[in-house]
Image (cartoon, rainbow, N blue to C red; front, side, top):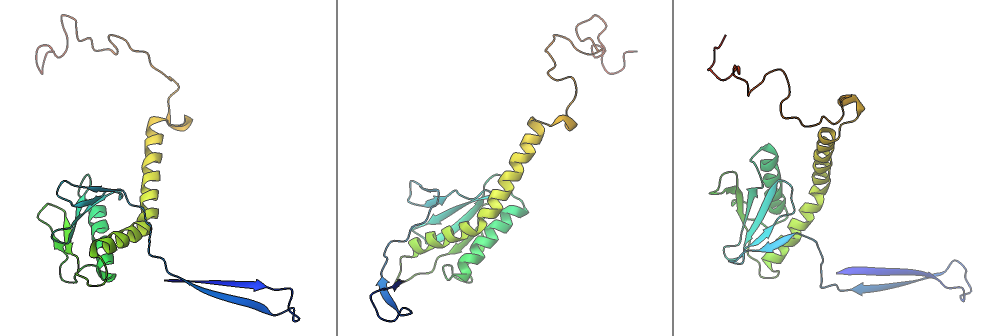
Length: 191
């Protein structure tokens, strides 16, 4: 529930310093957030926003499982641990349920039951808030990777040669592979 306060200056009143205050209580039922979310065939929700991990919410068993996106590293474990600890500190996950999953490098935790709120929607909201805290990390590592790719694919004059584009030729260099006495034709030692 939010409170909307308007302070107005009314020029009709006798006192010029007098201001009218209007307080409105606004009840907002809809909460909006953005996640890249897919539904699996069995109804599991898959969140694919993060650079290092994929997050799966199993609706039937009320579990969250995190998986490494490409390769397992310290960055992946750190992201998984930060997510589950954030959800635990927000009261979404049971305190003693965070553990390693049955897939290599995965972590999982059980979502608490609730009588007043929908646990799955609350979990999605909390994951969205966590993703907002992770956004600077994701943007920074993506920008660094792009900078590395640019430095390799399009080097500046300091890291490039004067030759420019080298045209393709059938044979290059001093080792001729198609002659009668090719150096690699007779094995390792052909003096």
